[in-house]
Length: 267
Length: 221
Ligand SMILES: Nc1ncnc2c1ncn2[C@@H]1O[C@H](COP(=O)(O)OP(=O)(O)OP(=O)(O)O)[C@@H](O)[C@H]1O
Ligand SMILES: [Mg+2]
Image 1 (tube, chains in turn red, cyan):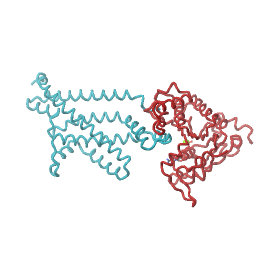
Image 2 (image 1 turned 90 degrees about the horizontal axis):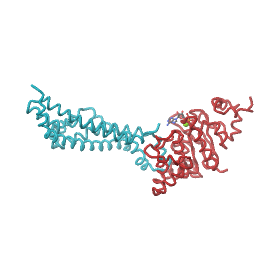
Image 3 (image 1 turned 135 degrees about the horizontal axis):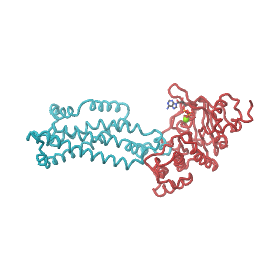
Image 4 (image 1 turned 90 degrees about the vertical axis):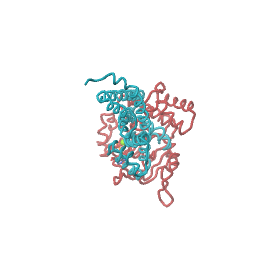
């Protein structure tokens, strides 16, 4: 299957600290790619590079073949592309954050309609009609007139998903979308994401929900200390807990339903 | 010697005239100070490192000296450098400059308190940087700074009393001169304090009303 988003030899440094090293990764069309790994391994940084919220220090990212942020010339030089070009390529990408990041001074409907009005220049009625349809998809039509402060965390995250979907991206990026939610609220957000995956959306998801990763993803990437340590199908990756770093990582998830994944693994 | 309530009543028309001037210079000075403070904060945020450093010095210079001294220097020192100002002009410029330093700090802190993630979400949704600033950063900042801005306006209201030293016939000047004319300082200062109190309470109530109306727009946890 073709890569919707391709990462090649990506490196990211913060000062002297190399956070990502030599990352090669294909987010394939129509697939769910889950990025897992210990805290501080660079998952968020990788995802933020994919949205060009961070500029990679090395390497290249292409989205449907178009370079994001930097172009690598024939001679191997990296050229920073103008902001307008970054914006054009980024139009393919929708982003969902751990902290929801809804705009507090706008209603749920306003949050979802904002970019339709500002970026797409749709008239108010049409923007709101489309926003309403997106809110209905995440089960929040009747909360459209509520402000973020009047919504639960799970509802806020669903509004954030609707806001990203409204711009009709071809790839959705999620950075730990359920990590700041109570366990009861995690399910409703994961359900929306499962629905999205079933509809064929290309997704890259940073998550600690190993159960979700094992059941929804086609592609698991295990990141450790800024490198991809293992990748492949859930079956192939989670069947390798003999890998000391992965075993150590999964240990901490045994109580979160990951025990089943370890069954049948070599002792 | 006794407290003369009748005298106070007889001063009320003159006091109201002074009050009117106090309110006028306060509103004009307070709004100009807020506008200039916003300009300073915006220039510091968007104007590059050199501008930032220069304006940091501006803010420090003003905040580190008393308003009384600044106004003295402006009105009585101005002529030495060819700056001849009417009392009202000096008062208005003084209030504007003095207040601007505080408003600049309030607004700078407000800009910094807007979560970066809210701004990144706007960029990811496709807004340009200018749209993000106009639609997300400025409104969120404005909501955050409302309480400290109201507070600072109240402080400025009371600072208008200092304008009496450059002979602006505002409330403090009016009542202190009536007090010395009649040798009735207790009466004059009581009335003066009472009128400021009413004005501050009304302003505070308006601010709290606005805050309550805007409460649901606050940051979700
Ligand atoms: N803006 C930054 N400046 C400096 N260092 C940073 C910055 N952002 C991230 N880092 C560092 O990069 C490393 C990777 O951070 P990152 O947030 O990508 O990890 P993560 O895998 O998402 O962790 P978590 O599971 O805790 O979210 C960490 O050591 C972090 O301290
Ligand atoms: Mg992270």
